[in-house]
Length: 231
Ligand code: E4P
Image (cartoon, rainbow, N blue to C red):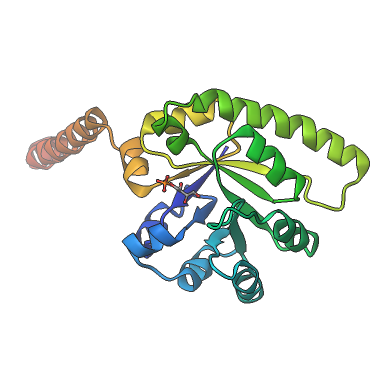
């Protein structure tokens, strides 16, 4: 399973670089955290960075795809006016522009995004959970569908991507991450606050502090004994 960082903060990308396989951003994250996608992309290259497009989806998609070699263009399946981006995703994917089809909340949406040739499909598990939906079952169902689908697509020699990956996003807790791993998610995109909780355990801290302190004590004991030992 791969880990993406769901953040646009340069310090956080730098901090988690050894364990992450990519980064996802969106307009809300950029508004809250600041950061510049070009700088982040440069730091991450060749790992992928998902950059979300809004408004004039196609113009922005072509701009980022042309300017950022490791950009994955994040396009929502639905438009704010109730329309959809199915045709655009299919056309850009066919041209070889990697698309992360985003803001998906159901297996049925994942199926449609896959059929358009998206390289990544982003299931917002936390938002499904917020509404009482069974996000673990939904992840499992999506993975089963993709496994089945990719076999068929490979057999037919499709011109589209055959390595579609499910990104589980909208992660709120370490429990969400572990659920996604158990359900077989290909990728989980995790906010820095949750990654920090995955890393730090107070008993681990107590343990390394004890080792450090005992090591210091041993050193002073040895240096204290040195003249005596050496006779
Ligand atoms: C994923 O790609 C999104 O950036 C993100 O996980 C959305 O999370 P939210 O539901 O907390 O906005």
